[in-house]
Length: 162
Image 1 (tube, rainbow, N blue to C red):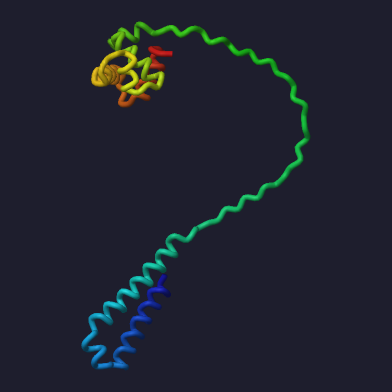
Image 2: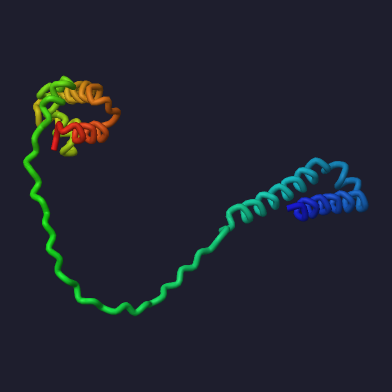
């Protein structure tokens, strides 16, 4: 980095020296502002290009080589797995009453858990979207949830919905 800065400084010094040595009266005196502006523009353009190339250069290259390994083939032995049958869902009515969730709010919660949008819930229940939003807002307050997904998760943990 210091070599580059010194190089630009040296280049600037050489350019100024060349202008002083040549000293064309007409060119330097009458067009000095344009010359110096052009020199500065060229220097900044070159510096910008150099910085762009050095800062966007890939830092590290990872090479992955695949190696084939011969693994002896074993005959799979059947294993008997006992999967318990899920019991029927039993709603936690005590928790439902403790939270004070109304039947309509529970119905909206179940539809939210089914992945329906506010508009779809309103169409299915024959109510306005604002009514659904009001019930959902009260439900979120009762469950201390900020989002629909969080409300569904909290309700499942509390045993309110399957």
